[in-house]
Length: 200
Image (tube, rainbow, N blue to C red; front, side, top):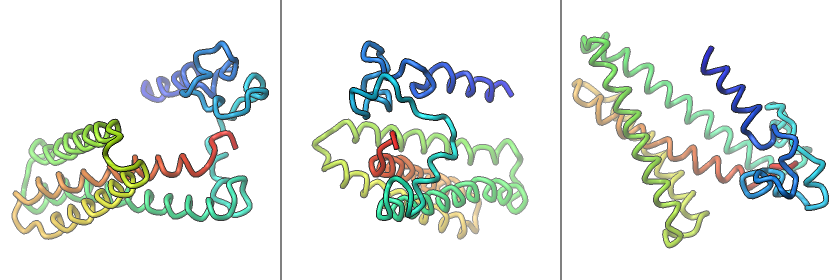
């Protein structure tokens, strides 16, 4: 409940599209951090983005404002993200139960699998952020494509390792490899964000 209230307060008080002055020329939110900065100068002071979270689903329609080609690409990206998250929660949920029921791990010991996932995911995102700041590391499109494939293959390798865990020590490297798959999320989300103007 507390986290939900904090999220609501953050959305209302901090997010630039929630503030009425997000497009004013003198507002600090009118710079790159604000979606209104992508609009024309003559409409910045009057137009703000609605907060309806379902509004973005219209971009997936061939008759939507993004056009049929962009909508097709966005639907494919959403499908990949859906199955990626399904695989993620399958790994996390099933692996902990498997460790407890098949190998007789205690809940405290089984929780190390979740800790391993979190640590490796954090380190993966850290490396991705460092590489993203180095402009010499290929172009943005090539970098995103490479990170997407690395993440997807890591997810496949992680699930294969966990599926073949005939001994309990294979669970830890399986979780570690699978956690790298989340780098695909940021790359795909970045690609989807550039396909459609956030103002439409």
